[in-house]
Amino acid sequence: MDTTNFFDFDFGANETQTLDTILRQARDTVNAGLLGAESSPQEQTRSQQQADDLLNSLSQQVARFASEPEVFRFDKANYTSHGLPVPTQIEQILEENRIYWVHFPIIMHPQEDRPFTKIKVAVEFNPGVDDGQSRPRALTILPEPRFRDRLAHEGELKLSLNANLEFEAHTGDIDIPIPTTGSLGLDSGLTTANVARLGLTVFPFTYRLRAAEITNSAARAEQVYWTVKGNKFFQDNRPEFIVILQVPKSIASVRIAAAMQAYSEVRLADRILRLFRPNVKRYLEAGAPIPDQRTPDQWDITAKL
Image (cartoon, rainbow, N blue to C red):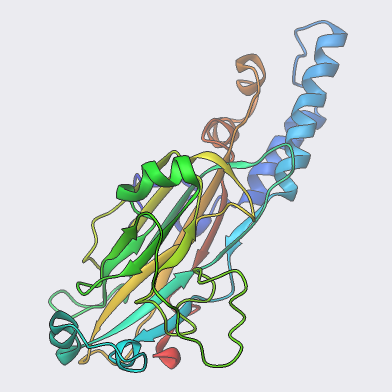
C-alpha cells in the first residue's frame, strides 16, 4: 500500500524505525543529562522533567486497529425482509456485484493530559494484484467532508444508505418506524454499532463524531485515505471508519492492507527539541504519532463474504 507523503512521520519501510526504538533514543538523551545543559541547574531540571513526563505519557498511549474489520453483507433482503421495494439502482448493482458494509474499529486510550488531536487511516483492497484485474472498490465512505460542519457543531447526525448506496443525512424529526423482531437491544437506537449487524442500514442510524476537519480520498477507488482532526479524540469520541464495498462476483477473495497514525500535541521548547537526535526531533514535531498497521495476510476477510 502506497502511503508516500500521506502520514506526517515516516517510520520507514516495514517500520524499520519502530516506535520503541524512537522512544528509547529519546530516553537516552534525557538520561544523559543533555537537555538544558547550557542553562541554569534549575532550568536544566525543569527541561529534564518536561521531557521525562512527555516520554512517560507517550509510552502509555494506545491507538490501534481492533483485531479485525466488521463485515456485513448488503443485499435485497435489506429491503424485502422489511416489506420495502428494492430500488432499480440496487437491482442493477447486485447483478454483477456483492455489496458489504465494512467497519474498521479502532481502539484508543490516550493519557488524560494528552488526547489525540489527529488521526490518519489508509486502507487498500486486494493490494498487489496485476494491473487490469478487477478489484474491490469503495462505493462510499464515512466519515466524509460533506458532513463535517454538522458534526463539528452537533457531534452527531442521522444517516442512511440511499438507492445509490450513498450515505445521506436526515434533518428534523424522523418518523420512520424501525422494524423489530423480538428484543434487538435498541434502547439507544440504531447506531454504527448495531445497524449493519441487524440488517437495518436502509433505516436512519446515528453517526457520532466531533471533528473540525475531515478529509478523505475519492470514493469508487481501491484505496481509501482519511484524515480527521481538530478535536480531542479518545474512546468515547473516536471516528468510525466505514466503507460500503463493491466486490465483483468474479472476485473470489478479499484481502485488506491498512495503516494508521494517531497524533497528539507536543509542547516542548525549540531549545529542548533541537537536542534530540534528528529522527526523534522529527517524530516529536510531527505530533508523536502512535502507529499501527495490518497486512493482507492478517486481514483476509474472504471467510466473511
